[in-house]
Structure formats: structure tokens, C-alpha cells
Length: 195
Image (tube, rainbow, N blue to C red):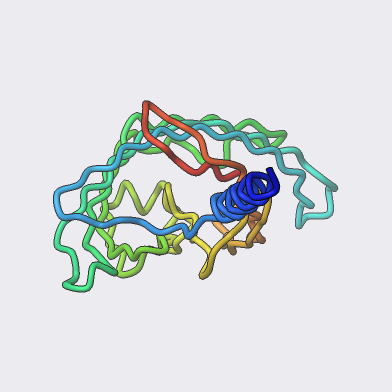
């Protein structure tokens, strides 16, 4: 009976170790030529902006959605970087404020190219006029859909990391906090949920 108890304790300890290991993730993109990633993004933001003319704070509310495909082209021999073509479509933006619509009429579709690495960082971006208008000329990683940079090392469930969000038009820059929430399933595929 004593041997059986030790065996059960060993299994329990091994299970706890496996659970502890399972609750961390090493977030990286897997880049294969020809892969196509499809995204649908919906967002809402509310900002109170101090007006430079001294008239006080003005409220700016923005909502929108867009669909995006990202097609992987040539992949570096070591698999660390790839050329990607990005297509934004069904772009919908609605901005309401006390001072009109600061975005004006925006394109409904746009394309661009970039180099993407396994930490989800975009460099060498080239964009058509519509993409430049949508991003207001910003070519930073976080300006792109899917532009959340992954942390350098492992991250535990509940752990957060920071991403710099640059100033874009009237939107002030700042830090974006990302938190690894849990492993989840989306359309039958295991995914990590990040908020």
C-alpha cells in the first residue's frame, strides 16, 4: 500500500508540473510560404481630449470594423522572417465628437506589403495611398491589424507586457497593455487569447 501511495503522489506531482508548464506560452508566428491569415477586427474607443485652443476637454468616440487577409510570400531560409501582402477590406469607421468627424471620408479597401518576423513585428512597410490614409502615414508595428508585438520570452497566463502605440492623427500615443488570458478554441483551432 505504501508503494501505491508514493506512485500516486509521483503522478500528482508530475501532473502539477505539466499543468504549470502548460500555463505558459512562447508566442511566435509560424511562417510558411502560401499561408493566408484572415482577421476580422471590431473596435471602440472613447477619448477625452484637451483642446489646444483652451476650450477644455472634448469627447471623441470611435467605432469601426475591418476584415484583413495577410498572405505569406517568400520566407527566409531560417524561417524567422517572411514577406507578407496585406489586404484590408470592408473598412468601416464612425467617429463622432463635439467637433465634427475628424477622419472625414475614409477608404473602404487598402493594400500594403511588409516584412513580418516570428514575434509579429512588421518592418519595411510599403502601402498604397488608401492604406496611407487609413494609417495616416504611420508605418509602425502597432498601426497594423495584428500588430501586437509578442514578448521576447515565455509569458504565463495572467501575465502582461507592454506595446508602444504611436501617435496617429488626433489619437495620442501611449502604452498598450496586452495580457495572456487563456488557451481557447476558435473554429476548432487551439489559440491563445490575448486582451
